[in-house]
Length: 177
Length: 139
Image (cartoon, rainbow over all chains, first blue to last red; front, side, top):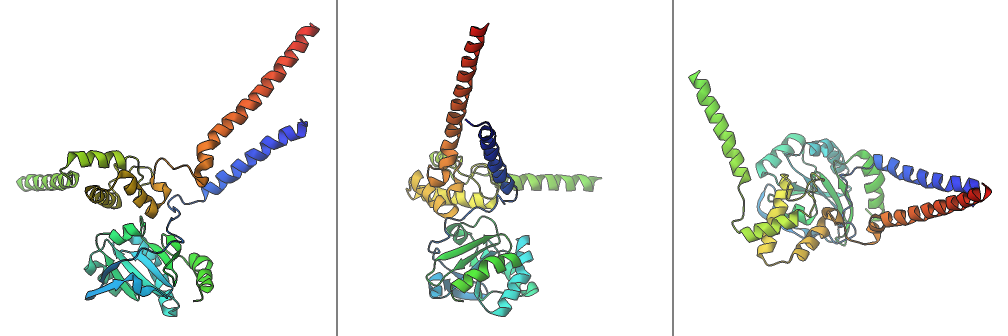
């Protein structure tokens, strides 16, 4: 074997390994890819916050592109994304439904009164069952669901302007919203 | 002083009581608890990722254990319950990842490295042996 090659091949392999490890430094281990992306969103029926006796049925959302934003009054990171949700609500571009995850109705309502309500409706998930069906493991989480009821995108953690511009807006364009 | 003692007594007992409440086993069926424990030791808690579902105190882990108990009572097999969790949280919930395209390098990579390393070692040793022979002949 050629002497230079003998030196270059291990060096190349080493550099590839270093490249992967370097990339790994900037990955967030908390962001676990959801197996639900590309699959039909789990259907559910649940009470609507502040509308006693009324139920929300996720099947009624068929034919609409919508965001499901999982939040809670006890979740500090949810407050970080709240102003952005408020801005999004002002544009009225996309229907946004909140899922009050493992929350007390009165506490959730308190937050919406204090910080404003960016949601078309807020659905309550007091025992976290809907959360389990959606594979929620850290709030806030946001799901983009298309007209056919398929989850197209999931974001874990607070929404940021970057995520909105680079991920959600292009997808909305693709979906014709 | 007396007031302080009473206060201390009150607070220590209050916290002990709260703790005891948390540690209480939820099910009174030992066979089911044993099955749950065995199973949840193979599952990852997604909130505190390096602990198992059995060890974690995270509220989500508690909810998932509750869900597993319910499904066990309903007569679901271990496989069905693991499939239920994998469908929602992905293969990441399993501490033993299944063999598939995405995990092939994880499973077979070490053997591949061992094979490559063994081959290189064999070549080097053979070469050295040959050179050794030549040197031996020269002397």
